[in-house]
Amino acid sequence: MPSDRTRALILDAAERLYAERGFGDVTLRDIVAAAGVNLAAVNYHFGSKDELIAELFVTRGIANNRERLTELKAAEVAGGGRADVKAILHALIGPTLRGCLGPENERSTASRFMIRASIESVPPIRRIKNREVDHLRKFAVAMRRALPDCDEADIYWGLHFALAMAHQTTRDAERLTKLSDGQCDVDDVEAVIDRIVDAAAMTLTVRTTASKSPEGAAPARRAERLRG
Amino acid sequence: MPSDRTRALILDAAERLYAERGFGDVTLRDIVAAAGVNLAAVNYHFGSKDELIAELFVTRGIANNRERLTELKAAEVAGGGRADVKAILHALIGPTLRGCLGPENERSTASRFMIRASIESVPPIRRIKNREVDHLRKFAVAMRRALPDCDEADIYWGLHFALAMAHQTTRDAERLTKLSDGQCDVDDVEAVIDRIVDAAAMTLTVRTTASKSPEGAAPARRAERLRG
DNA sequence: GTCTATAGAATGATAGAC
DNA sequence: GTCTATCATTCTATAGAC
Image (cartoon, rainbow over all chains, first blue to last red; front, side, top):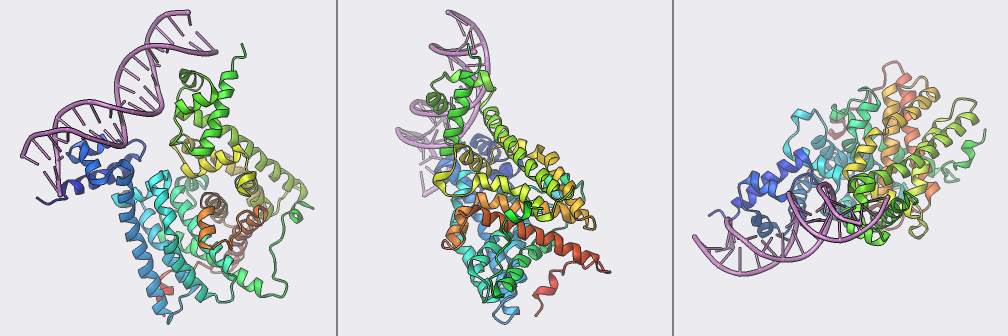
């Protein structure tokens, strides 16, 4: 009777299997076997394998975006309508990292699924990420308010870099651990968040200061460096 | 008679098709049709579709790593055995970005293939990237020489962040352009490289200074920020 | 509306002839 | 080393039961 019990069973099994073994290694037949439903039910409820993946990803993505905006609003209220640079960056990358980092065994199925989505980046997920621009725009607006004298392009670069560091840290945490022989602790989530926020904020605030100077303080060109 | 003419034909056609349409949308049958060879030849010469992709990726990857090391050596020679922080970062990300950024129509097939590899990140490519650690270690060594007083973990984080910004810029150049309404010019390759080098260098040098202070200057904790 | 059984088209891989 | 023929598996689509 519950019209979407089968639907929920599929979503549940799919998220778990994808989280465990990745998109490439899990077939629809694996999913329907785990869910105890018929193969055709997937196409009936979702249309295709890609749309099933997309549905899983938007569900988790929406939750993540909501957390981000909640934190952004809180920061704006705390700052009397104008949030601090670091607080904005924190709202942008904190929720994502908190969901994707931390000790392996403490991670939920949802976390593991999002890490997979971040690493494998299959077509349906890329399509959805490309529609994320409107969401990011809200952070750009907040940032312009926080840094009214900052060049607009620099603000976008700052947000881009913050996301880059956060994203790559979830993607390549293993490589960083190996490279540093364990000296970089990616399990200390809040420390990682602070580190990325500080790095991104630095590029924004230092640039702001520099661009206020008369000449515009253009970044040093490359050729100068290789000459003794 | 030329034992690997067929092999070369396959590699050539595969790189071109993968660059144009991505790994998921190109079948082995597409490749052999474009190369004018038989389907079974792929498995004979490469073993599997994944190994064909891997071969293409290592070929280009090796070339890229060689460019990086050449630039690193040059910077070390120019600095009398000790390269400058920015020069090291420049050697690390310059070759990759120069190959992946710039005006669309000027990009070679090899460039487009590497961008694809960066975006789609299929299993065979991930496997190879995981073996990249030894290569990165050389940059860590150079960096320790440039910043002898810097905390070792900070150095690894700095390299990680530099790679993160470079990588994400090739992956999501389109999103950044859209978000910034064209204000961020990703086609000015050298300017992008400088921007990333500056950002990464800042995290390294500022942290070094800070960590020299008596208390260690731990980064501000998150909770402090949300309080008015 | 919801689900099952089944058929179809396409893919990567392989065995064996030449 | 190359090719034909074929296999097992995959996603997708449809016809029809409940």
